[in-house]
Every structure is written in structure tokens, then in C-alpha cells.
Image (cartoon, rainbow, N blue to C red; front, side, top):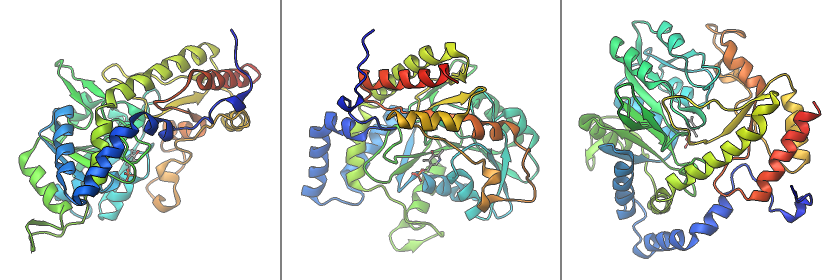
Length: 386
Ligand SMILES: *Cc1c(COP(=O)(O)O)cnc(C)c1O
């Protein structure tokens, strides 16, 4: 096989290549932005409403409520469900900090549980053991692009009469097949779903954005009210709320990109397949395990080092012009801001091992063949010599 070795002839490899993606949809995006400017409908304009309707249709959910970012979406969900200080919310110890942050900010008590070593998602057995009479909700995070074990999670939640807030910031578009055969999109299975449109997410805008999804009419109305200063009628404030809106320009961009979302997922999956085929036979890394019940939209392609030095591998790849990232280097219970006498090193062995062994490779919708070849050749070069 002829492999181009002069990597200066390649376009620089990015973890996420938003520039190349923009080039392909530039005409539509530019026009959508221009329309918002021409009509000066910057806040709550028709673009927001149209995007909301398009996303409701795509997800097969009754209500999408756009907001300012994914962290707000989680916070608004917890406010709308009326949780009180001291209430306990269970989430995974291996996740992005936003999940635990809003729980703590609202004076609620984050209860952490370990994750499954293969899917990286919350371990349902550990979750059930963590339930007390103060537990009001579970926040499963559909990490890296595939759904947590929602059949088990919903069973546990229903049994104990508690809410499920799906953090679907990394898995928008992933599909979950339940035991009864029904297929639902990530974020539409629990009480409510929260997502982010941060630029590097699978459906990303050109700034900040987020949304909540629910099939519950009453809850949707509360969410809308809380996101809008706690008012249903302007200047009549029934509750303490927040100001959290999706800008019209961002909604206009998202509307264009939503049409591409399934194609984007297919491109990511194709790249993941090529990585799997190249790396699995080496035995020196564990390739991402795909859950049985969920499709994978590969927000991240994350390997686990198996007897090799992860940090050395990252350094080596970077020396070859191949970026790599560690999501996430520190478990939540070891983060300075979240240190808690309830938890100590060793409490979440799977999470702690993952933080020491995971490494994520470039994953996006625009990977060129020669870039992919360089990434694979560089990883293999390291694995074969270590
Ligand atoms: C990105 C992300 C968030 C937060 O979204 P923002 O829009 O950055 O506030 C929350 N949870 C997870 C799992 C994320 O990946």
C-alpha cells in the first residue's frame, strides 16, 4: 500500500474539524444567518421556533425547549422538577463536570456511582445500591455517544418512583432499542432530556446553545417558564427562574446542521469502524465496546490502553501531528471542588482505572483518507514498538 509520508501535504489533523465542515454547508449557513440579520429577529425569532419544531420531529418527542447551553439545560430540568436542598441525585463518577456542578449549585446532593468498564456508562447495579429515601432523580450520562442501559435505569426509577434526567449532550441522535422492541432517540426516554449545542458536539452551533426534551406537557410548560425568568405572562413572575435562551442566529445554523446529523453520524461510525479494524488485533488497546441496545454516534472515539503507557502514546502521536485528548483525566470525586468526606481514592475503581488509561483520537465528520491513514499508521507504529 502506498502511504503518503510527507504529512505537510496533509491538512492539519484536528480533534474536531469544524472549518472543513463549514466549507461544505457554507452557502446554506451563510444564508440562514443573513436572514436573521436582515429581519433583526435576534431573540426568539422564527428561526428558534422552526428549529424547535424540526428537532421535535427528528427526535419524535412532544416538546423541545431551547435554552442557552447544556449546563443550563440540566439546571433548568432540576429546577422544573422542584427538587429541594438536601435531595439526592445520583450520577456517574466518570463524566464531564457540568452534571455534578448544577446538582451542587442548587444545594442538592450529588451521589456518585461507578460506571461499566465496557460502555463507560453508569452501572445500574451500583446505581440501585445508591438509592436512599432521599433520592429524587438519576442523571444517566450517555457518554461518548451511546446510551446508558435505559431499560434497567427506567425499571429502577419506576420501582422507586424517582425521575430520570438524561444528559444527552454527547449522544444526540443515538437510538435506543428497549426490551419491548420500541426504538427511541437518546434524551426522550426518561422524564426529561438535556443536551448541548456547544460547537464540538455532534450537533453544534457557532457559539453556545442547549435544549431540553420531554413528552410531559405540564413539565414542558414549567421548563419554558423557568427558562424565561419564571414568567408565563410578561412581567408576572410566578417563580424564581433564570434567563436562558437560544439565540436566533444559533437556531438558524442548527436548523441547517440538523438536516446533516444522520450523515454526520454515519461518517463518524465509518471512521470508528476503520479505527477498530486497525487497532483491535494488536491487543494493546481496548477499542470502544458498542452497547447491544444502543446505536453509537461516536461523539468520542476512546481507546483504553492495555499494558502500554497512555501518556507516552499521546506524546508520540502529537509528535507525528496527530492530536489526542484525555476525556477525562480526573474522576469527579477526586476533583478539588468536589472533594467530599463521603468519598476517597479507590471508591470507584472502574472510573479511576479509566481516567488513567483512556485516550481519545480525532473524531469528526470530515476526515480525509490520507489523514485517517496517518492517524492509523502512527497509532500502530507506537503499539508495535511498545
Ligand atoms: C458538553 C457537556 C455538557 C455541558 O454543555 P455546555 O453546553 O458546555 O454547558 C454537559 N454534560 C456533558 C456530558 C457534556 O459533554
